[in-house]
Image 1: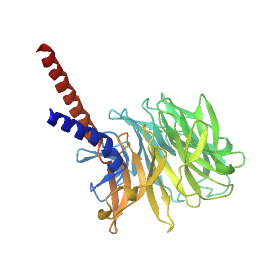
Image 2: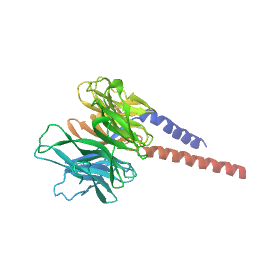
Image 3: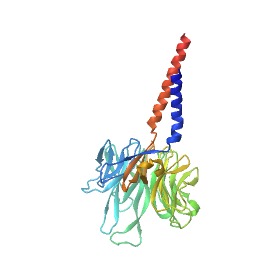
Image 4: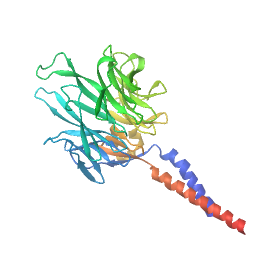
Length: 377
């Protein structure tokens, strides 16, 4: 009996004390998948998405798969958005003689790829860049229109780009806030879309698009703003300047109609990059030396990721890319001057808690059997 009580105490202390001591803390795994691999997304299974040798690709189970989304013999592209239902949004691009970049957008699911059309240039998928996709397969991003802009090379004219939503083989123009350009950057399972759009004063503002209407989310002190993501709870992330005309933007969380600074530094630039379904936000900001440092924002607190890894390993966590629902973070990092892509995994990992809870469940079974034996006696 004394042993059971001691084990129970140890388990309880492990469950309730370990998070306070270990969290937030991360183990760092270097992703040495290939010299020319660029991974920018990680899903809940740990699969990596991006490009390999400048081609659209993903990496799972120790193997890299190149996704052929077009018939181009020399494709240059990458996967830019994924859904939990297995959708992959990607692009391929090329540069003209006049240094104008055109992009083709694609949606791939269950091995089948569909080219995304464009608003302008007669369609055909010219100059369409996808940035988000939800579980229903709705893709959002930006696409060129037929609205020609003044200036530029007459042989390679420039056109305004508008935010789009692609669903059911149809492209929908989401419009702007009264200006020329707009771009959609995120969509959740409910179909709510966020991004950035020019207003009538040619200032970029974060927007939310729902019920067929684009609404300005505002900004800090009248400055510019941009929304970069939204989760299924409707929490919106992005960045905004604290004053009109300022080029320094601060990462924000928009919830319940309120835009809140994540707390990096109003004097130094910061960006919110991704948010998971648990509400954890990752991003990066510029430090006093002008160097980028990655951070995570959770439970109302912002933490520089450098301080959440073993200091003896000398890691510098720089730009963050993606966070999955298990809290794993894909980031760029340097160790003793050698830089690359890494995966940060929370310590203790979720499996640890599962084992602790399983242990408590076993003790509960033992206790019930003991009571039954006593009652039978």
